[in-house]
Amino acid sequence: MASVLKFSKSFSNLRKFDNIIKTSSNKIRGAATKAEAKTVVLNVPPTRVTTLSNGLRVASEDWGSQTATVGIWIDAGSRYEDDSNNGVAHFMEHMAFKGTSKRTQGQLEIEIEDLGAQLNAYTSREQTVYYSKCLAKDVPKAIEILADIIQNAKLGESEIERERGVILREMQEVESNLQEVVFDHLHSTAYQGTPLANTILGPTANIRSINAKDLRSYLDNHYKASRVVVAGAGGINHDELVKLTEQALGSLNNNYPGKVPEIAPCRFTGSEIRIRDDSLPLAHVALAVEGAGWTDPDTLTLMVASTLLGAWDRSQASAKQNATNLARASGEGDLCHSYQSFNTCYKDTGLWGVYFVSDPLKLDDMVFNIQQEFMRLCTSVTEAEVERAKALLTANTLLQLDTTSAVCEDIGECIFVYPLDLLVITLICL
Image (cartoon, rainbow, N blue to C red):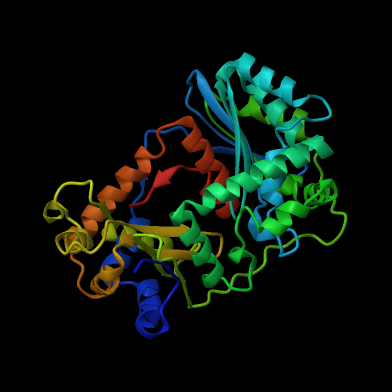
């Protein structure tokens, strides 16, 4: 028998873990609280932030390099949608590259190619992002192009129909990625009745019906100056970036045609979804409890705890050599093909847990070992383990920020989730 299981929390076995993991053990919590009194100053440039008169924010780090990444972050994603328009944010992201009132799609592509630059975008549950990787000398042109595509998108009927087909094919590809499917179901059951339950791509029925009027309405209601951040990293002169942004986006306003959109409060619901498909050889499972939002003091604690759980798959060396308890138990007992811990954060909530792929006959044993490890983290984790997890988390964080694109993305996201006074100094507290 094969099955695909998605858990947010089992009432009978996991209810107690929700409160325990939130407060965590004194030892793990100590890793975060002690860090507050210890500031490690890194040899990195400061993050400079400027707010324009229309409320738009500009943030950058100047590395003095010959390349740069600049982007426009918009505080709008699937969390701002409802059942009737779920999928419109992602649809709009696709349409942004299909021509503007100033440029055809062909002209846009040629201009980018002539610069030797890259232009890309993505949509998440809380943000929509358009960015470009280019030579430092071409930042002015990149900013002008990015500003053009978010302000002057043409939204032609033929282009909409073409992208409708592209998105429907993309949805089919996502359905074949079982990890993506599991996490979509995890959100749908963990945040029932709230916009966080929405998928980013939206339901097929919505994609088939979205039209130019829907897209224009979405732009008018969400692409506002106070909800936009221009971020840059690499060969970026902050003062010049501010001037370029004023020229390109200074006319962006905060006038809403109707009611000002507000982010709906989340509501976590402990529940379970099981979808059985006997044609699949393995079970894909996500087991999670409610985590913490980005600004919650428990976020660092949960990051360390997630690192303590670790990750493992059969392609790695013998599990006996792994420093993580769960990896040793999983590998030596042949309980799963792979697993990975996760700590997904949003503005005001999060999901913390483990995703694993296992033989259906091993599911009970794997879930039991995960629960045992949850309890061990809360009651008997050692100082040595915590110190190792802190070192590993620090290293992984820094290694993930070794490119201009990664730093630019980090800046853009942080502006939306942290108070401005916390962004003046770049530091790691671990």
